Length: 209
Image 1 (cartoon, rainbow, N blue to C red):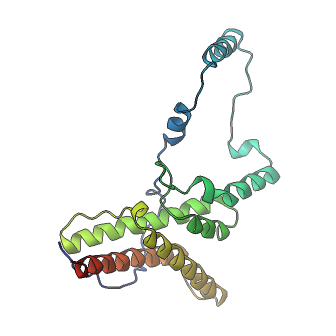
Image 2 (image 1 turned 45 degrees about the vertical axis):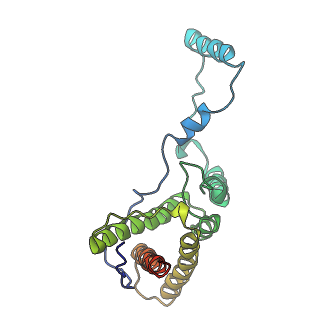
Image 3 (image 1 turned 30 degrees about the horizontal axis):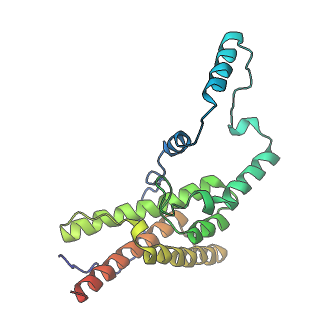
């Protein structure tokens, strides 16, 4: 087993950060719906669909786009999404959800200004940092490396602790009018978290034989 120690460092390079790596499978809702017990509803659904097709009277197509809601309603919807994100985003062993502890999602919710898009962006930064760390570790050790967050509660907790510290550090810098790129700062802190954890994890495996 390769026990190469990954040196502790902080990456704050000017890197492009997106939400590409958020682990939410797009077909999760469809699969969940397929598992529901719908006995006795097939005939009723068929009749409903036939009625709609035959009469062409159904003009109330569902459309949840932002343009269909007032600013007041949108604000309430966003507040609800952010407030309850820890319940519907956290995996708890379920596929299709995000492998972070509920405390992490609650923390991100608290710092997202009731904006689901900001939540998505911050979660994306975490997983971009994870991916970058896996690539770096693979290059350093010569062994393909993937970190499965569902398997390591200690790492999930480390992410929460370091994220809280990072948010506070960014606020202090911004309050002091110091120049800081929040996205890159979070990315660097999270990447450092993953690589330090991996190094310590490999050392513990080596020590235990």
